[in-house]
Length: 175
Ligand code: NI
Image: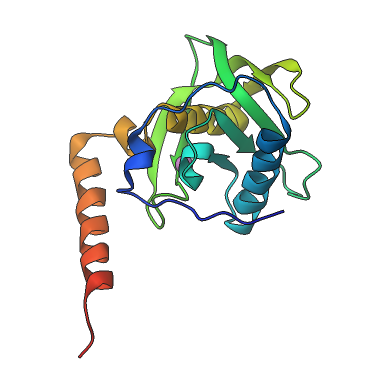
């Protein structure tokens, strides 16, 4: 397995819409495994293909305690078919593409979704709480949406200003 480079905001690929997978072939299956490896190495609970510079509709998720690869979900073309309109769930979200920044995001508590697994087989899944939150965050990535788009403009601007400042400091030269 290969660890892939994670794209950091403001990389344009994070704002682009990923394409549906026509068939889960060997290349896609390998990309899924490499993404899982990259997710674990980055200590993330989820990762979307945009974040490794690939515009294909793939996400990986593991919200288990063990994080040993046994409970990993490798999903192609994940699509929410239903969400609970009544109950919401709020979680302090972070993102491997927006390192060091967190914000409380509220989303539907329960969702149902369909996806293709690594063998290309169609699966249905019901998810709630953190699992649901994480899947929604990752599907957002495939549509060019980031968690900071779900918070107030004021909070978003504070985060974006900090990121800009951090970048300028990194770009600086020590003489
Ligand atoms: Ni993310």
